[in-house]
Amino acid sequence: MSNRTLIRGGLVLTAADETHADVLVEDGRVAALAAHGSTAAESWTADRTIDATGKYVIPGGVDAHTHMELPFGGTFASDTFETGTRAAAWGGTTTIVDFAVQTKGQTLREGLDAWYAKADGNCAIDYGFHMILSDVNESSLKEMDLLVEEGVTSFKLFMAYPGVFYSDDGQILRAMQRGTANGGLIMMHAENGIAIDVLVEQALARGETDPRYHGEVRKVLLEAEATHRAVQLARVAGAPLYVVHVSAEEAVAELAAARDKGLPVFGETCPQYLFLSTDNLAEPDFEGAKYVCSTPLRPKEHQAALWRGLRTDDLQVVSTDHCPFCFSGQKDLGRGDFSKIPNGLPGVENRMDLLHQAVIDGHISRRRWIEIACAAPARMFGLYPKKGTIAPGADADIVVYDPHAEQVLSAETHHMNVDYSAYEGKRITGRVETVLSRGEVVVDGREFTGRVGHGVFTPRSTCQYLN
Ligand code: URP
Ligand code: ZN
Ligand code: ZN
Ligand code: ZN
Image (cartoon, rainbow, N blue to C red; front, top):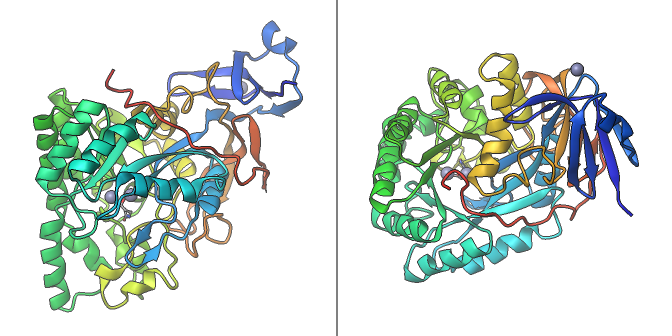
């Protein structure tokens, strides 16, 4: 018995096209599209018809940077795979790529298996994994090959966090060389952590303990320097490079310069860098702790360069870096010492809406919205066209989006397991109405109709910008 759903009368938006089309979904996949009102579309029958008149029909969002249950600074990110993927679905995201962690002394296998165990049977939407390398050595380098074969095709390295996730330049070079050989994409946290730690120590010695000093010690120059160094190391290794959570204008300039040379260098930014700033970090009464993440929020003036980069394709992807810690009990760990505030912001539920607001505000076009939030992350991480578009054969991960609805973002109404919203009170034009994950309706208006365990691990091919 096949199971058919018809999405009728909407404006189908992909990264390539805007068409008034009906979408036929069969057995979890897109079976066909046909012009609305055409003989073909009129002849279709289905078990369920969704009226999308006046709405957008868009691919489900692909959030390529999340940290569910991440251990950090003596605590754990507050969203589990269950709560975090449910919140993602509410926000119109139907795939996440989360970061499995190899801690020092562990094999990649041990780290990855721990993440399979956390996610397996708990997710509302589909998921994949990147692997964080914290211990680059002969055997972990060899293990990278096996992970690529198993569909874990990207590896994050850190130039920051000495003693925790940090790799030195030699380790980075070796991992990049291995990536060149096995097709794995190196993702870089580009901040000079060795220099930052000196500035942290000096700031604390001067009694500068408030959250805003987190932004002051993590200097723009040290993001730009690390970005430049990462590009040069990648050139030496003949490797492509993806720089995560780019926040500074000077770092965008490094990426743009590399791309102008024709190098396979890619960049991601996040909503927090586009919509928030050091003004938030400076909020009194320790409220600034809500906005502590790394790279840090920057002065407002940097936002224009990030938007420009997104328009000119010097930045390709917007992911959330969703890594929530409750204000009460978790961010609290850093009262009196900003360096002990767990790093990270919630946002997996807000990304599609914030980027639609950017369309309304004139920063990006509608199709660019779909490109940076759905298609580009899918291509970057080997999920396209299964994910990231609406086309025959693609997974029926589809969002019916009401571009006229008004909403106000708030912790009172969000579904993320965290006691504050980084965007509290922000007005958004646009709202997710219906969400399908592989053909199953998981969000139906104001009701969650999905289920724990519907989401499955999704193996990925290598980066699709390189072939
Ligand atoms: O502050 C952040 N971004 N926390 C998550 C870990 C990382 O560096 O992405
Ligand atoms: Zn119309
Ligand atoms: Zn990072
Ligand atoms: Zn991250």
